[in-house]
Image 1 (spheres, rainbow, N blue to C red):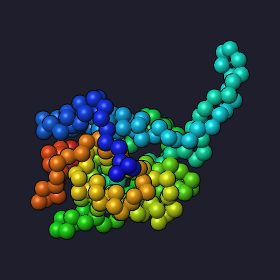
Image 2 (image 1 turned 90 degrees about the vertical axis):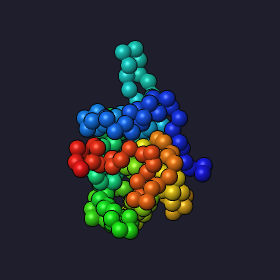
Image 3 (image 1 turned 120 degrees about the horizontal axis):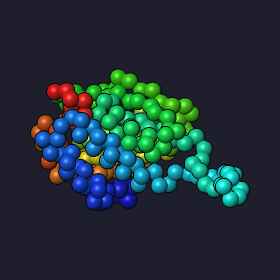
Image 4 (image 1 turned 60 degrees about the vertical axis):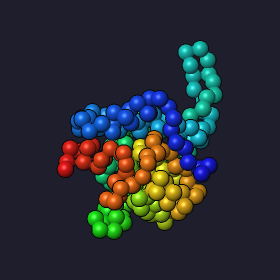
Length: 209
């Protein structure tokens, strides 16, 4: 899978281990998710297009690179994806933010859409879809499909933890997108939770049960 990047930076590994710990409380968990998103975003956005602009330093006029075009759209998958947005905005404050709402059927584990709002013109933007967990891959694959249906072309997907089953499905359904994974875990259990995983990311970010 040449379009898949598994992060190997020690800082990311360290923070994901802290994230997994069941004793990590809501406030620290939320901060860690944001920090990991920022560290991963630094890698995921290394190919953002740039163009030279004229500026003046205290010494002289010069032509220097800045991010080009309509820039970046961050699209979190609700609700857990919201926890990653702040980290990316720390890197690119000018980015626009869209939202995709999907809920998982408790019986079939398949996703259903309930909300989609994307920044225009979506076809001219680099789109970074974020969700902390890629479990079955259903929500991630459906979110990318929805963005493509709205005209999105340059799409990246970023998750903190993935199961092999979800990564394989997302890659199979969308071989044209770049996928960034913080850690690739062992497998899904019978309830479609990632093992060893970190539990329910949304509940741990927002302090709900």
